[in-house]
Every structure is written in C-alpha cells, then in structure tokens.
Image (cartoon, rainbow, N blue to C red; front, side):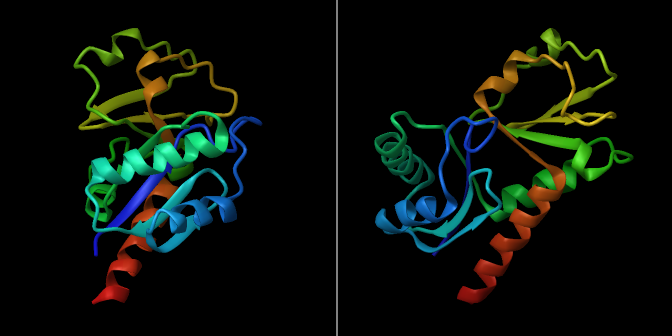
Length: 175
C-alpha cells in the first residue's frame, strides 16, 4: 500500500492553526489511513492509503476543515518525490536548517521569482513544484518577500530528509 507524506500548511506556527499531533493521527486513522505517524509539531503526517493523491487530499482537507473551521491546506508527496527534492536541492554550501523548501500544490509560474524581495541576501530557486530558499542569516528575522510562497508550506532540508527516511522505513516494513 503506498505511503503518503502530508505536509499541512499553517499548523502550529505563530499561534495559528493549533492542532495536536495526537489529534492529527486520530483524524487520519478515522479516515481509514493505515500506519499513521506524525513527525514534530508542524503538521507532518505519514500514512498508507490505496486512495489516489487527489482523494487523500480531498478527504484530509475536509476532515481538517471540520475540526479547525477551515482547511489548513494539505500538500502531499511520496517518498520518491521527497528524495528527488533532496537530490536536486540547490545551494550546496547552505546549512540544511537554513535551506527551506516550500512545497506547492502546483508548479509556480516561470516568473514567480520576479517579485522577490531579499534584503538579507536570500537566494531562491524554483525546481518543479518546490521553491528553495537559502536564508544565509536564518529565516527567523528575514524580511524576504515572495508572493508565490503563500500557496505552499515550507520545511527545512533537515526535516525533508527525516520525512523521506521515515517514509522509506514505512515502505520497508511492508516488504
């Protein structure tokens, strides 16, 4: 059964979208997803389901909307997709916790970086459905502005690596 990695947008960040990970696991189990696991408090959940990516997203967003009053936004990726993100990550000299990957539901337009405001020397690159941003001074105080990021959810490269590792372990358990 395929492993899905769901990345929830705006969950437990800056006091908005509060959702305990135990509750997220319960919601996913209630939807019939198997082997549900969460990773850290920022809305990362892995599970198995035979449903299509579109149907998984639809059901999870509907359940979260019922619980939270509105759907936080759900981005799904497979283990292979996460491994591709890791393999193609630009900015090889960047510390992994200073390289954020914004996962988008669709590839951004080719001109998405035209509106980039990067006052602290941030660098950005689009590859597929992701926008990679290197924050040389960290993202916490950055004044970076890029409207294309609003549709997505960001994880640092360390988190992406861990999610890929967890997804691979789940796939190995089934074989």
